[in-house]
Length: 356
Ligand SMILES: *[C@@H]1O[C@H](CO)[C@@H](O)[C@H](O)[C@H]1NC(C)=O
Ligand SMILES: *[C@@H]1O[C@H](CO)[C@@H](O)[C@H](O)[C@H]1NC(C)=O
Ligand SMILES: *[C@@H]1O[C@H](CO)[C@@H](O)[C@H](O)[C@H]1NC(C)=O
Image (cartoon, rainbow, N blue to C red; front, top):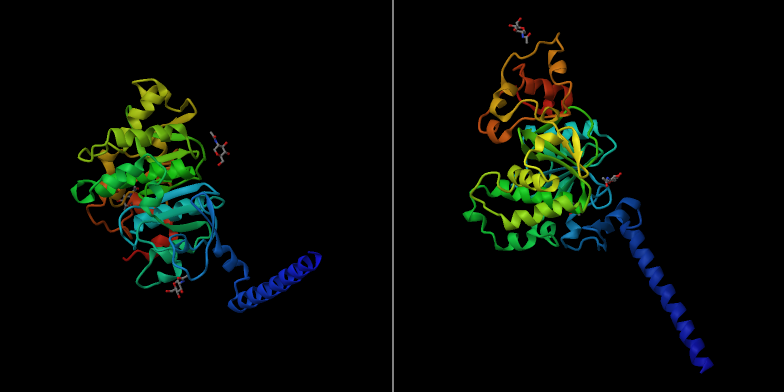
């Protein structure tokens, strides 16, 4: 009895030594124990720690973590629900300006078609991904809809919906994504046509878009906030893909009215209603959508005057209504338009990539 016990221990020790030696050797040879590689192997993904075997292709392995992840560190969230891999200058400017003004916050850019490997997107074919990922607080992440909607009220909807029959599919998808992203991770969501002018305050907030009407283009929430859960449920229950904004600003408006127990949201402007700050429109929408052309008007400023600075001194950001303005092409460089002013000052790297 005692003898076999001893033998067992000896065998166990020998096996341990051999295994450790072999593992350590091959690992050192492959360089697994340098820190960045090691961090890639242990990834925090969707709230779970996952051990990733290098070289093995799995969904988690496509997430090459360069730094923090929204699960562990809420930040500023941008998303692109189309398959575009070359973000437009306005998208780049929105992300760059947010990254520069909030240097201590991670800025996450979720892209549908991105694989997770930044080094695979090089110039000259790709401009935006290399430029944006050169900012130390910008992290580009793949956007996998099944994973995102998993464990949210949107999972069943996403399974059933037929994109080919949807009139506003990219927009509806984006409406659903931002709610799910904020509910799962928390942070601040910004539309990709929002140029930041000031650092953002992390709090639960919704922005007024117009009289008694809230926006879903800019939202700030803590993870698992019950208001967002209401919105996700409402998204499915009242879904109507044929009506523009039904799952977007209209959804936020009707849910905020319910949350605050009012038909008149404007009474909460600059105030909090049950833990949600209702922010006035001039902070993010200083020019209403009906006047979007003002951003592109030529000769709005001269080098010597600071009238623009004064005009927008109260705003945290400018939402430039790409849904309307994106249909036309505008020259930015040399136009002396408001948009050129904002590019030069708030996203100089993007500005440098514009053609004359
Ligand atoms: C990332 O892309 C680069 C360039 O295409 C390639 O050399 C590298 O092996 C890729 N890395 C992974 C982990 O797929
Ligand atoms: C939201 O989360 C942040 C940390 O990310 C925390 O500082 C803040 O107090 C939270 N706010 C609310 C309203 O729970
Ligand atoms: C800028 O200068 C031009 C030429 O001198 C002038 O026509 C224009 O009105 C000025 N614009 C502003 C906003 O001052």
